[in-house]
Amino acid sequence: MSIKVKLKKYIGILALLIVCTFMISTAAQANPVSGHDDVLTMVQDPTCLTAGVRTYTCSRCGRIRTEPGAPALGHDFVLAFKTMTCGEVSVRTYACSRCDQKRTETGDIVEHDYILTIQAPTCETAGLQIHTCSRCDYTRIEPGDAALGHRYMLMTQASTCEAAGLRIHTCVHCRSRRTEPGAVALGHDYILTIQDPTCEEDGERTYICSRCDYARIEPGETALGHNFLLTIQVPTCSAAGLRTYTCSRCGYGHTEAGEPVIPCVFGVWDTETPADEENPGMEIRSCGSCGRHEERVVPVMGHPPVFDEPIFNEIDIIVGGISLSLFMVFGFLVVLAVMTVTRERKTYKAYLKKQRTVELEDREYDFR
Image (cartoon, rainbow, N blue to C red; front, side, top):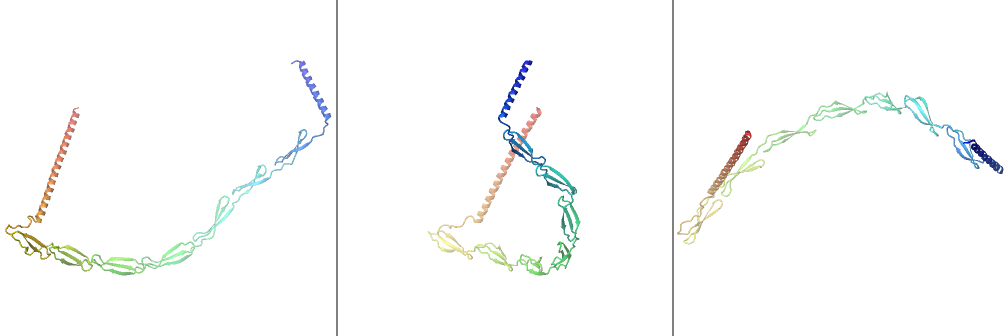
């Protein structure tokens, strides 16, 4: 840049400043100065360490001016908490109620704060004074009142039939007991009751104590056994005989079979209806014991007599039936034996065949 250009620039700035000064002086002559109109706009309260501030603002030009206000308040310390440890120095902590500032102070050594507990004495042990610190649970024990000693009260327990009596000494303080032997056992006072034997049961001798109701039973006389009286019922042709035994003491009885039924004793044949040449007759006979009747037909006269008698009697029929049954059982056993032998032979042949087959297979395997 050349000197001429710089010179023109400075001349222009100077001319601008002259014009501005003239305009300001003209405005000042038209409106003379009347002073600031300060108004209190803000008050800043003091704190513990700093003073307050009052702020003024001009209502016309907005100029701000400050002045000191109330002085600093200083700290307002209040006891916040206290540390109390037994055997150590106490510490007090103070806190400002306005600004959270804290400070601590130390005091004297803290002593134990004892609470006294008195343990009463018993009959055998002395009492105790227990001092327990309320802060640290430290305990200090001191002897208290002396032991009381037992104070016994006597109670007598009477003897029984089997147990001796007792003298019981009970302490009125601790209720402990001490016993001593008293009167000797009385023994049982028995009353005897005899139960007589019967035909089947033995007798008993029962001893019952009159004092304690204890009972003892001993065997008495042995059982008497039945005294049987025999009553015989004679057999008839309709009923067999009986032998009845009845005990004369207890009435027990039993009956046994006696003699078998006897056959009927029939009389002679009496003609009920006589036979003639055209019609057969009828004859009858009766048993003298049971009154049983038998009848038979008398053939027509002139013909050979026909007897109404069975060819085989009942005994022959029974014997024949038994023989036939035995023969059938024997035949069944023979057939069963033959079938068993045949089945065993078949099983044995099958076993031999299987063995031969196995041997042939083993030989073929050996040749290979």
